[in-house]
Image (tube, rainbow, N blue to C red; front, side, top):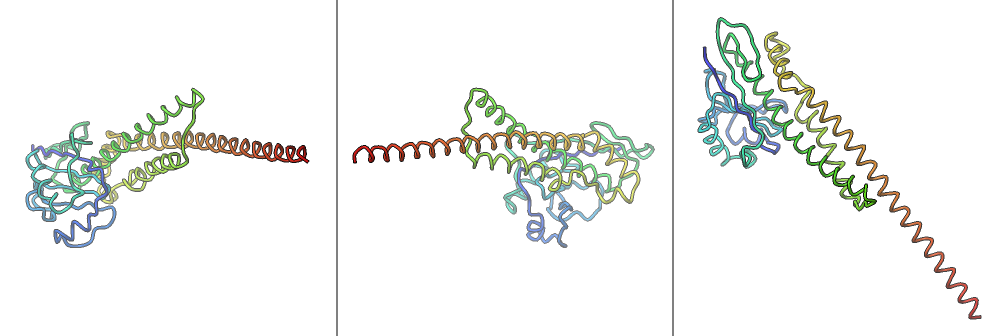
Length: 274
């Protein structure tokens, strides 16, 4: 029986993989859904052998997953790659992290648990799927944290509204709406949260592994919550926008009334003078 660790980080920035691959002379151009897989010690493209080679899976949406690497290996990788790509830097305080293990036990059948998966053979597809799932999970964790910040801001605004105060400029309302729509876009399209790895269509066990892992890390449920929270925030933001516009319209009406009254007063004064 052999045990291999995974460590996933979210780097908080979109990564131009083809630019990095070109710098490293990593061969062909990557498609948008492919990770850049580098051997940890050499920064060369991973070619598939041997299975246990320590390597890093870098995803364009800002996640990186290390396979069979200890902390020293991970720090060494960041030091080396950081000289070539400013976007690949660890977050202060550890950032958003997931850990998992792959256990290869030849007599065993496929078994997936909360902290590890047991597989009967050393297939690269198993590593690819676990890395893909962990990358999605840490990216979702970042979006969830950002959503909570927006919710806290909305609570403060609602509290002000309870006191009869509403002083939100259109620029802030537009910025908030843009942030919320960005959360929905990043979770659905950018992170490909509803997409399955292509290998799952070819290998039945790979498909079962991915579906089980997606269920363990609650990818679908978390996406549904993000979508629901985003819709709720958009509704709240729409109410604020309506109230803000109504307040502005009322202010303009009062200005018009005052101007008319002023013009009328001037006219009457002129009439009395003559």
